Length: 112
Length: 114
Image 1 (cartoon, each protein chain N blue to C red):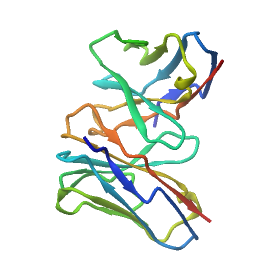
Image 2: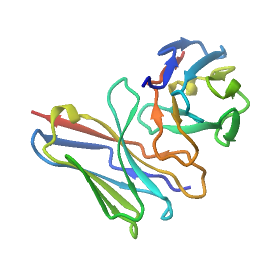
Image 3: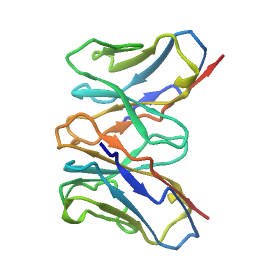
């Protein structure tokens, strides 16, 4: 079947904006999520967006949703070294219960 | 509020041995998930419980993996016998009820099979 697709690596300088992109599989997914995973830690929910929204802003985070193209993006403004982590895009496909389906993750590296 | 607790944090076993992982979800959370995260990949669902009943175990390799959630609270995941390809981080997550949007994750158990 189709997979949730993400680019694997992103490298930015401190203070720049980071944009992490994702293509998900089910156009009828109700919620779409971004999780953050730091080394040796579990997954932390960063933000989520309901499918009837195009954009959601939460402090330094902006989520954009393009349902037609099944494209989700996460923008981090003023990226800090503490933002270095793996970022996972996830969906709950409508026909697949309530469990999250994750992408492979994008490793964000922030240099000072 | 205490988070999802998992133990042990690390485990090294030889292939063909058995191993068990334990998870204590957040108090009051009816839904519990076990995920397997192989290095370099995203987490993949193994099994989902609603209270003490199984909702989805379609991706659980039932010839060697088993899981239970007695009394709808704690859960254990067992592998017997283990294979090299079972080396991964096993993550437990819980949420309030099936339709809830946020799942909270434990720190995981890192299993190495040698």
